[in-house]
Image (tube, rainbow, N blue to C red):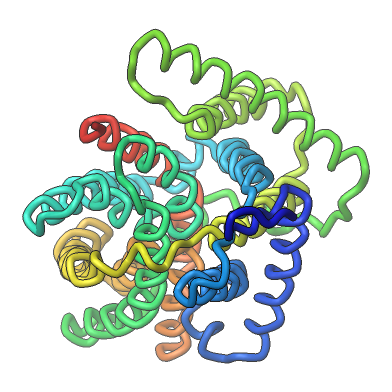
Length: 407
């Protein structure tokens, strides 16, 4: 660390160490405070935001300005994006049948809509249109991780304050998604007098053999293999993305391109079995990368940037919320069958369309506990869509809109 001209610089190793401590602190607080678990607030948000508040107070009272080296956070962000690609597979759409296809189609449409709607609202309210993107699909359908990951590209395009706006919007989305999803699902069931039954025939058509495999311990070879594949995909993806950016003039973020390189490699590897990638190990690497990267992103949150944007941001988020409720009710519920399963999917759609996959599962769980019947269809489609397939269109949509409104 170094202190010069009223600025405290925190170097790479120190900032990473602080990030790990804050993550552990967030996990501890999450266990102790029920309201955080109720609304699925991630531990990195709790720990990282605590640090951001301290930095804000130090600045407000003119004690010192803190500057954090986020190099490690950026690397972990890249790693997380590659793991998303490696965990995905286009064959999942076929496995889930037409209901999954219809559902993910609406999710892809939502990603485009939230960006366009956000830009339009921001323009009408007289603020930077790029901040409409930061508070649109990147923060709502994407969540904290996507908001933090896309913020550097949005800020580089001219959207100053995109990280702060995006993370604030994502936090709102978590709470709103948790509060609204369950009541909507319950209302659809009562309003339409739905039979409390689920589609058993669908379950037989889906290969659930993975769930029957015995638990396997992670070993050294699995870890080294996953890290090797991730680094190779990153090395290829980031360099090709830079080359394409130079040739086309269209900014292609390296981590975004690497996600699709990982997805293509996973699809090819599943058929040819070139290298064995242990899914449990991949999940662990993905979660560690996401949680530490997100903690360090929250550490860089500039709360003071929200002063002049508070009212416009609230208006944008309320309008986005009303829109997604209408989409869940009028589109998702109808195209997925207008039955008990569809009501749960509509509830889950709000959960991850505003917040995150964890929110979607939480609100669906609340509804199923009330009616005493779990829908395997809904609990398969929501995680697959929210955590993997949405990004196939969602991420490029954010990149395209960012380039369109760059200045």
